[in-house]
Length: 383
Image 1 (cartoon, rainbow, N blue to C red):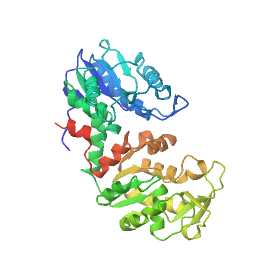
Image 2: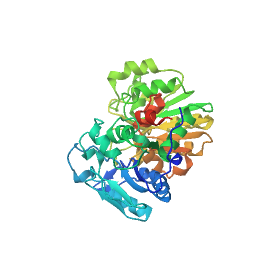
Image 3: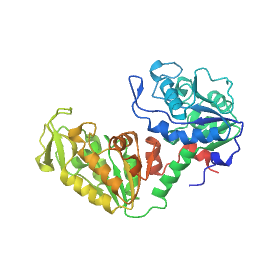
Image 4: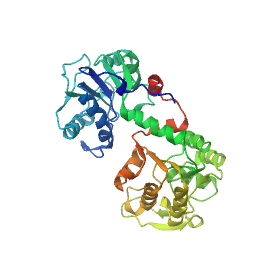
């Protein structure tokens, strides 16, 4: 990976600095559920302010219909949270497309860029409007670096000066450390619901790692490939043949599981060995023997990448696997790198943020980088 042209190399005194951040945070009834991505962006914003810049922030939130204003996806709660953390007003600008006045030391947040026609299509006109907002365009949203869109790609190519923000540089450096200058044994833990969304990353990781722990619904598909009954668990029958092809001594699968006949907060959880699974059972977590097995690999690892929970950790009865695994990663002496929305939620749940070597804000971008794919925004910013 070449070095990225960074914000620190530019003179931004009295300049209008446009920063593409990722404030796509989980929301419920108009309130922010988890503000980790907002907190991660603060150092970049504070740096630009200390340099005497006018700061203009760009982000998307959710998946609104393009070209339509939708109150459910307004960035107003983000502006309020930023104002709280930065201890100064952050003005939400709804109609920003043709520029607006801003003075050095002030901060503006442009309304959801996905309300604008052409964002997803990397439209040239919208890209130019974004680039024209400032003197420097800073890409700091690693989580969106895999998308060639107007605010993440087009605006970079059309701006007078473009660079990577500190958060993006830190993400890439952490991933490169894990993948390029890693210490072995190298362990990857991949959980989540579906093999289909992570098939290519599993293939890519198998070529790089010493061991690959598989959890969640993905593990169920692999258990079916081994010939085990998985009851009415979440799995992908049409991908069992592909899972069979991937099976290798490197892949570590559950040896016991926690099952229930329904997924609910009141469901009765039962620990079972694989051969005891019945047709009515849903596998919802890993069992104690599997926890001990997985922990033995975590303890030996020198480099560790984690993406995705190993059970339905949102329900206490099915959270032991993810919690125990997260805690053993936190205690590990390995360089640990965790990424993906659910993974971040789990780390936050168990108050382990400061115990993981690096927490990536990216989900899709994190996985694509692990696969070895080139990310459009990063390609553009390589010196």
